[in-house]
Amino acid sequence: MEPTRRGVLSIAASAIFAGCAAPITTRESADTTQSTSSSPTVAVENASIGIDSGGYADLYEATVPAVAQIETTDRTGRGQGSGFLIDPADVDGADDRLLVTNDHVIPEDADINVTFHEGAWYEGTLVGRDPYSDLAVVRIDSVPDDAVSLSLVDRVPPIGAAVIAIGAPLDLPETITQGVISGRNRSLPGPLGYSIADTVQTDAALNPGNSGGPLLTTDGRVAGVVSATSGENIGFAISAALARRVLPALATDGDYDHSQLGIRSVPVDPPVAELNELPDTRGVMVVEVPDDGPSAGILQGAPESDTIDGTEYPIGGDVIRQLDDVPIVDQSSLSRYLALETSPGDRVDVAVRRDGEEVVETVTLGRRPDP
Image (cartoon, rainbow, N blue to C red; front, top):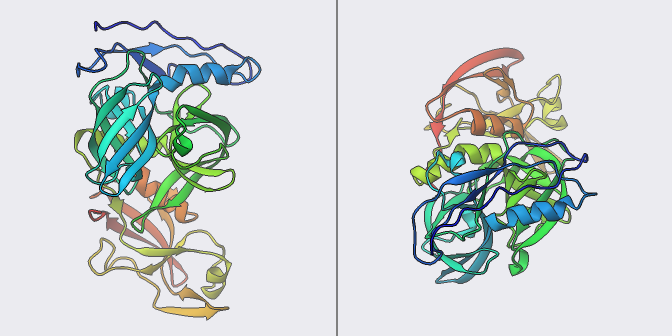
């Protein structure tokens, strides 16, 4: 089959939402069963989407060609999730046949097969994975003729902004749900003892199988990669900001190095503040500093503790108030700064409250251990 050029799509305008620039790219594709050559991308001009104008339908039609259902098979059986074709510009131009999904969607040594809305199946190969951010990149052998790719937002929209999720919940492909951004900068518990920083919370209905699919803004760009549900009307997505840092390394190197301060810490809640005679509940308290970690001999853990109503609270540890020039108000802000602004080997100034005084220490960040 000869390559065919797809025309520029347009989406009906409305005054409901503010317009944004060219989030979707469409591609010339070679034969869907044989060719593996990459194709140029063409920017799609995109006006604002409005509920009253049927904008969700237009948005769905423009973006669903980028969204895939992923099926995996290994010795434990069949698994299923979602993914989407990523704009090569967001992975340093690495490839135009790359799918973004969740790390937890792809088991080790699994066979990967991918299908889009046109129904054909494509073989996938794992390119890179990072359990610390729950992101993975898969390359498929070719793409459909009408395939489009999705780009990441430059900045997550404000709380209350409309979003849609497209994916294959409960093995039902090409499903769209809609909602709003319910929260930002959430910390999501990860599988290896580290939190996933800067996740986006939404009330769009998400179910098993949505994992790895895009959470889209009304201009068709990716605000987050759907990762988890935590109850009715509460779901989470890996933020575009974290994905923008991690995905290029996964596409080119196969993995990503996260920095770590090398401490165990707890939030400064009212009991911790009271027991430590702190003036407020800002910051996080250092509970333990491993001897072989980057903060060993620099930051101080809590030498004592007290138990109140069956809960143990630390006493006497450093309280981190600031990293470099950024205030640290809680665990989420600590995780977010380390995840989005630092790399292993960076030197950071850590402002702590210690024995009633403000002290600044300098720590050279380490690298998280391999999973």
